[in-house]
Image 1 (cartoon, helix red, strand yellow):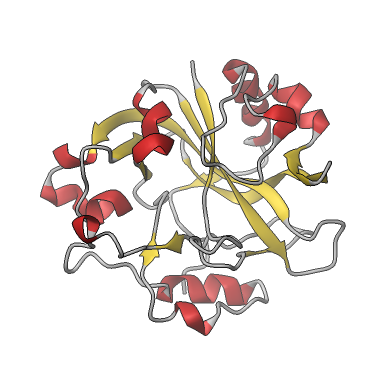
Image 2: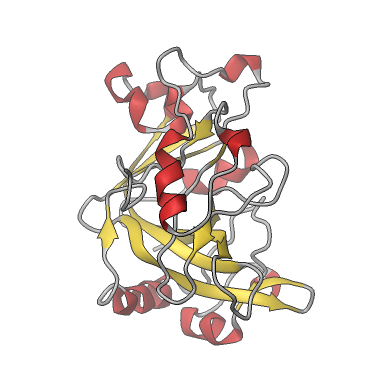
Length: 245
């Protein structure tokens, strides 16, 4: 078994949107807001009719007391992972580790979220979803009837684009996020307690502030058993947001 930890969602980096989606630190309810779709690459332009606007993410943010900035209203969203269709795409060097995954392997998604109430962290780094891999396909081989299911086929892909299709019985967006880390030693890191419970990560001292190279779980089975315990109290759902309108 293999398992990768994947950072997703809008955040404070310029490429991602310079904003963090909201989370209620008391209830762990959160809004999933994807990164910007960058249209500077002429070879990977969005296919006509496959654009995703930020309209669907306004109400989930407002329900948690944080308004989606108007700067996103005329932008296109790179909706990936797409929890409605249980897909995840990647490309280039960052996507290379995914090529080695097989049926039954795990992608655990986390995001940096902004608390809407005072708490002991400026940002909350938390798991927001998990996929158990069903199958993986090069984006170029995905038929037109499935182009709408992932951001990497809503645009023109190249040979480095890959799309994961998750097992629908074991995968989805978490109904409530699971905080996994905070700021220590000058960066955001997974807590020492969780690093021990998971059996460790491939990154030094649980570093999760950036994810240019996907961290892997040193003991995937141990992480899987830990997550099964969490899932007893938190549902996985095939929805991008629980409150869409």
